[in-house]
Image 1: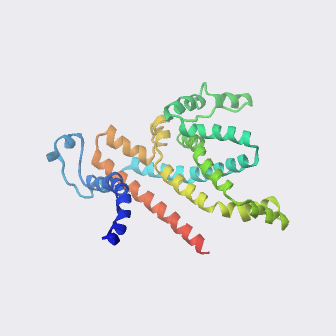
Image 2: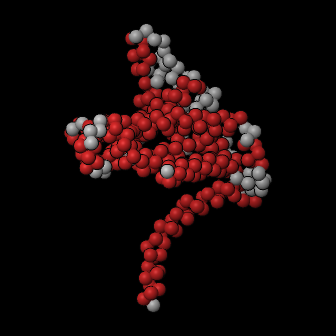
Image 3: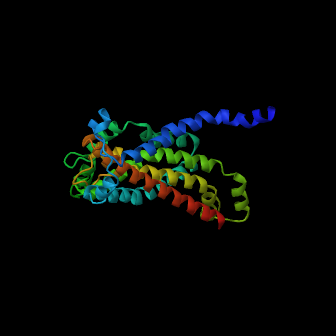
Length: 295
């Protein structure tokens, strides 16, 4: 009896967490997959007899939908440009903060972290003014050195870069804290031994600091890639996907089809495509991490 009690005791503690994970994580995935094979709309939610099984029709339509294909291109553009910039800028900020005094480090840590906890609507108001083509601060500063005004949010390509800059500014705080924690956990004896061996600053950075922060870098990269694949708030509040769908991301497209066009089945199919992309991107990163550890 005592033996069974010890075996069942861990299940008693992890059971509620596993149950919550099943209900709020796995169940929506399978529910979304089921909905993607139907023509579910708002009417169908009120009367289930109006829901029809249409097989893979939504998926076939998706990959013929130019707006959806454009949103996939935009999403990969955000990931390929935004992720390296976001990770590297967070690392640089953390390194600089680790070199200054405690008071200065605490002050700038607060300044860099503030955007991460600021409401996105307030951010949109401020950055909307900064990016305004006629009255914005950025174009005013450029006019002082005789540079023509830039259509920050009016040109599709420029608007993508504008949103990337905004998103990096907003997300740097959390990643910076993770890197700072990793930096502080590196034993000082490593650097003392390197000093005795005559290593310079760059050699210590590449041979001690970067390898010691490999797990933090991996964690920040994985979570940043997932976040940028689900890029939603910035295009939603700043451009609503425009101009000419030039800033429309997959997550915003799913929202538009589901809640603006009342096409839940179609939106569920798009969300499942995004889910597959996120899973594949995460598995690839874990494979690279495992391969790197075996070298």
